[in-house]
Image 1 (cartoon, rainbow, N blue to C red):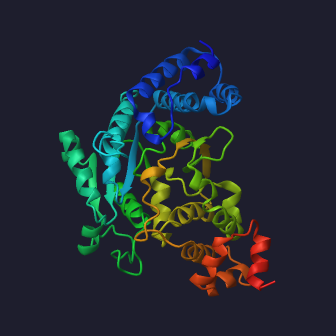
Image 2: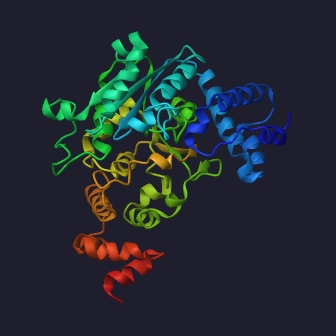
Length: 405
């Protein structure tokens, strides 16, 4: 069967949940079987499919998963993956679709996907750590109840749940330095929970090469793509790899509100961290793989516990001279149930920008005479909200606004 026929027969994909429906999973299996016997490279097949535009979305996602499976099948030595999954107000996504309008059955889906990857090669071990980021809705408790369904794997802590609030109260020795409860000055907004999970993951004995992978609570990035994410590390070309939605072979279905959100913020952080910007453009997509030894080296430097923590992790690799690569991934938005809009957890852009200034200063990237930095450190929230209401298109325009000209 040719690519055009596969594209025409693909099931519809309109949201992340669709990529875990039985029909799509059966389609992936068919594409995988075809891909294993068909001549030609992944890049060549994907390039051909790209000419079909949006109609090829489902095929290209399935092809990503097939390529990931190929990489996993070819592992020649033991590899342990620890997938980290912070949760905050995620009880809806953890339910089945018949139980909740935005249900994704996300925890069971991830366990099923990880077990499917393990079945491809006895060299692979895949663990899952869920971290409750002081969720008021007890997301961690629900996740733990789901993971208990897996009996021995839960008892052995192959699948486990951590609770940030309990760790802060203890206090747990693996807790990131200075991290406070939600009402404190150094609260976690996903970052603290993820970093805590990293510390815990590194404490566990692992077979062979140990790779720690961050992941959002939803299914927007299908975890079956892990093979693509880890290939450069397995083959010693990098110590960390960031999944990117902005590469030629990336596949992205992004909700309309996210097409305009944050573009100015991206231009701002790239201004202060140009060395990182030359390597990675999609810093905030939570699908990155870190080799355990290199992660242990840079973790003590990380001080940001809110959304820019991902930028600091990558900048720490750049500054330390540790090889860092990027790989194009498939991303399907899970916008309807997003938890990033609530006042309880959303950091203002102004606060995030000031954290980027702090990162640039601590990693030696900030010019002390930078006028843009001076502006952001002195502008009020009210003034910045007025700018956000009608944001400039370029940093040059923003500088003019900062000067009042």
